Image 1 (spheres, chains in turn brown, purple, cyan):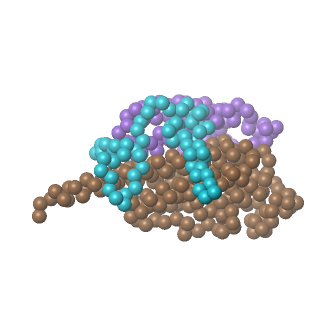
Image 2: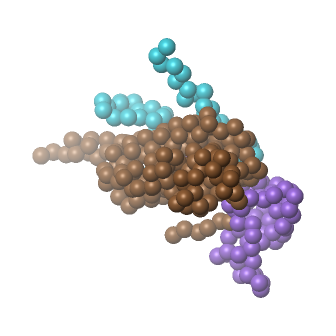
Image 3: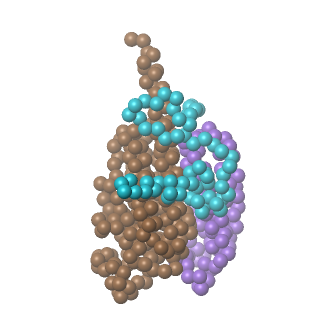
Length: 196
Length: 91
Length: 59
């Protein structure tokens, strides 16, 4: 069950609003490779993981991604706080504002609302872990796209942090896969040795 | 949020990140005793810094507190997503 | 849980299987402050964008 800590994983204090940038960053909130999809994917896959190492890894990375969801939501919120209608229009933010005003809504940069179809829970450990490895690379790539579009150091620093975490997650999913492969090897060798 | 609040919070974040990174490492390396020792040492520092911080600035977690007073501090700003204007000193 | 020693890379890799190297413990860690800045406490996992920049594949 989840406990809440009243602090972000990394400091976020964005002095200047920027609705244009907010529309890009929001993709890591509700987009195809964003943190909502990541947390839901890992926390859903954990139920059918075959050993303690896999269960712990899926659980703990899924939990960390919820903290990242909070960070991305915070960035979007601070980039759009107190915008006047003039600023909204000038920032190309009018279509989002029409449906959500200055609320933080889970959608992609292109405006597609979040859907579970961005993730897979196959119930097969190799497929699920391979899906997770891909997810982390896609998240990393998306953060790199955002970094190429951002010019505000207040936004760049937390985004760089989030990108770095994806690389660590990739490593842990890779290690979990190694452990599963090793266990499968042993089981296979055991059965091969069994006399019939 | 004043400067010393921000600085202390950043130190807590740094220790917390070290712990979380070690936790994920240990989840796939459960027999790495050096990592366990490093985790415990860091957790010890974190816990005392957290206690010190909370005494000054209010609770970060609430389910481990039995010394709450009225009014209920948990609701107090700033919440983590709120922008802290450098000029305003709320705490 | 049994202590299965996982090597850095497998001795007998199998076709159609993907392998990520298994991190080995190193006493050299970042300080907590460096760790927060870099997004990890492990120097080996600090991989800047240039590592993933494939550049122009087709000129």
